[in-house]
Amino acid sequence: MTDVTRAEVCAAAIADAFADDGEIFGSPMGTLPMLGVRLAKLTSNPDLVLSDGESLYLGGVPPIFAKADVVEGWIPFRKVFDVVAYGRRHVMMGATQVDKHGNQNISAIGPFDQPQRQLLGSRGAPGNTVNNRTSYWVPKHSTRVFVEKVDIVSGVGPRAAKQAGPAAAKFNDIHRIVSNLGVFDVKGDDDTVRLLSVHPGVSVDEVVDATGFDLHIRGDVPITREPTEAELMIIRNVLDPKNIRDREVPPVGAAK
Amino acid sequence: MSSKPRDKRMTIDEIVATLEDGMTIGIGGWGPRRKPMALVRAILRSDLKDLTIVSWGGADVGLLAEAGKIKKLVYAFVTMDTVPLEPHFQAARQSRSIPEICEWDEGMFQTGLVAASQRLPFLPMRAGLGSDVLVNNPDLALVASPYTDENGHHEELVAVPALRLDVALVHLNRADEHGNASYLGPDPYFDDLFAMAAEKTFVSCEQIVDTAGLTVDTPVQRLLLNRMMVSGVVETPNGAHFTNCVPDYERDEKFQKHYAASAKDPDAWAAFKQRFLAGDESAYQEAVKAFHAEQEA
Image (cartoon, rainbow over all chains, first blue to last red; front, top):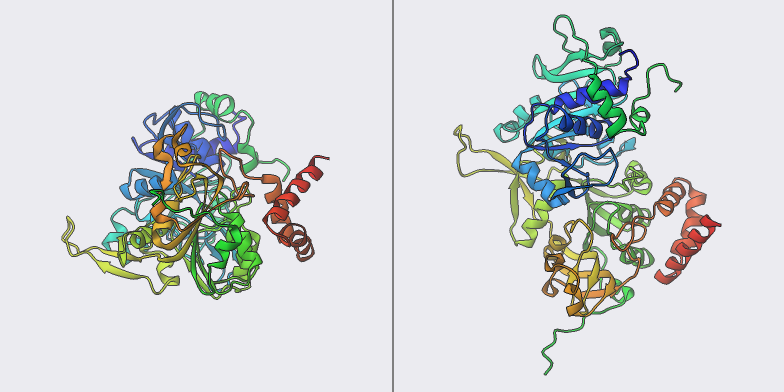
């Protein structure tokens, strides 16, 4: 298919990140993660447990941002914390910064005492990353996001977790970083970010230029798979008929 | 002698009159959801100062920061969801106008409140390990497990200190005059923990009903607060505005947008304050009504 959009490639790549998770709580933050997790549930991993992002476990798989139809459980915030500690959860968070060692920052830009730009705060990132599988979604890959060292460590990468001791490293599991340009993990030498694949139409050089640290690249880098016909049908007709995905990742070549 | 428990009804101003400079105040709800905003607005009108505010924050934190009420802020995030970044909170952080800042992980908050509610000095937790939460809160200490794990390690965990509160302020859907209170929305948040972590808890609610009325058409599991946790109750209809208080009302997105836009510009903010925050709670509610009438015109 030649008309597959970048957003659709990202959705399938995110779905793949949840394909082998089994029966755990898939917890996406943001539009494309929500789309990707629901796509995984309708294709590779029907056992995934999904929520409405508020307080209900969804029995069905409604379109993104739609209200729950069938409810299969109750997940108020206090129970989210329980599941984080229980560990049967895979969260895909955003990241204002990600560094060479897979640390993530959503707290603030600049010095903590007086930031240039205060963001949300660390939210649940410190707890997530030492308790359950965590992935990151970056809709706009750039050297501003992929930095040598994050200003503030909210989400803990594998090296920092090991340095903090066994209690921190035991359940630390930074699984994937998916951006609008490619797919990564943190299994490069010395626990560094490694390029796993580049999206169709993206060159390795493009990814390297948009990354503010030396990426671990081993051999020929594969191309991220395109969604199947069945996946495209689900994305376009079932999960996101209003095409909200293009607002987060505009089609390549579209006017900015 | 009456066998009835005492009547704890108070006015907003009576509640705020019991608060003192320098107190540690926990604010219930979550971000832009079911916040005791009528009580927060009353604090804005008061002379109170040097407060320590403990909150999973929304505009409650932004408003108190802008008014210069906060000496120390304990938070994990401050957000209004559909407006992700709270402008007053951002400005306060970027101008360093809040003297003491404690940014925790959001789960640590629950642990700290549980510790306080159980009168424990701390509870152990993984959250924080390896992150800058420990760097930026040098008071947070680690504790070694007295037991070995499967690898023979004595795991070192974060000793989350008890978040003891002088006062908790929470907003629920229904309460009786004795302080029993229920939430009717999808999430209790942590209002019971705030109440048990505090010396005194004041509950604002959409409606005060008689005790039997609390369960007449509502499952008993929705009764979140028992009166032994509560010092005072006040009926403040629309008192969580502009945060939500479902099913009574959703968040007022139009107003929130107006708040956020005004907060970014000094002149617009002065006008907002004059229009909405210069009077008492009933003046506020009238001004909100007029705002919506204007929007629809």
